[in-house]
Amino acid sequence: MSLSNAKLTVVAITLTGVCLGLSPAAAQPVADFYRANTIRYYVSTSPGGGYDHVSRLFVKYFPNHMPGKPNVVVMHMPGAAGVTLANWTASIAPKDGLMLGMANLTVPMNQVIAPDQVRYDATKLNWIGNLEEATLSLFTWRTSATKTMQQARERETVMGVSSKTSVLYQMLALSNRLLNTRFKIISGYEGNRVISIERGELEGSASTIQNFAGIAPHWNVDKDITILTVNAEKRVPRFPNAPTMMELTENPVHKKMLEFMMLQSATARAIFAPPGVPPDRLEALRRAFDQTARDPGFLADMARSKIEVEPSTGEQTQAAVGRLISTSPEVAAMVLEAVK
Image (tube, rainbow, N blue to C red):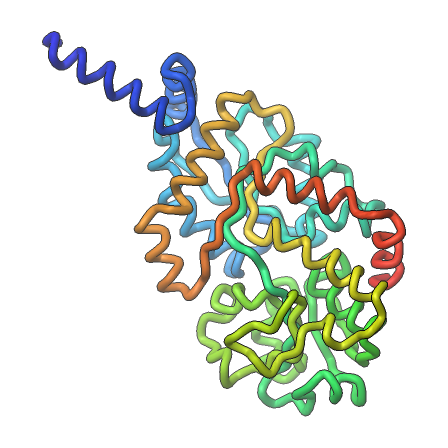
């Protein structure tokens, strides 16, 4: 190797370390580790849904921003609305930086309101970052007679969800308890919810507004469904006729309970790693996440899928999860009682 080439090699290694927020000495061992290994990226739902779609777009670009450019393979571990994957991550998954997972929205929340199934501490999971804020909505299909929240109070409306630990169930149950709706909530619709709605077996469900393109890209959201309400601080400009859930109650305690549920937006499209990942590898994963969330190719793919990218860093996500877990026991207990 010539002297000039040797100098260029040293410069390249130095720049790689600086860009990742790592010291030059730390960057090379991290690169060597990942170059020789494969990252297994687990999705907490079955193939074909919104989480799967976003994950596959993400891992298309993520390796390019990792030291050593490792291979990344997508795997699935559905069950109990993400609790199965989170439990496995905390207790069994390798803690060497070769396992990542896309958490279900409710992973931190379930620690508070459904603790019997939880074997993890969400504050001790290593949060890598969050790709998207989430605006939860309740909706009905175009053939349903329920077009407004007032009508949802007057008639029984059949709504389908994956399980009782899902945020979809929780929001519908809260609506029944706090807003006096009459939703008949049926669990068990893990991967067949969309087709069951289209067939008329279900009248509707719940979803984040940002996720419609993922769960049903062929739907015309402005014509095929009616957004009954959103759980947000203010109305969503695209659906100005859909009231916020907090508009529909004058009870200040009920408003606090709905606000508590809104904190789940911090993990709408969040990626985590197990506890105990070596600090230099955790730093590399977080900085690669940040760069992927700004990658023009990734952003273009997400735009074509009509999915918004509103990223938060791993550090910001970690702090938000801590705030959710520290919610007052009184409010948490009332939410738990309301979603039974």
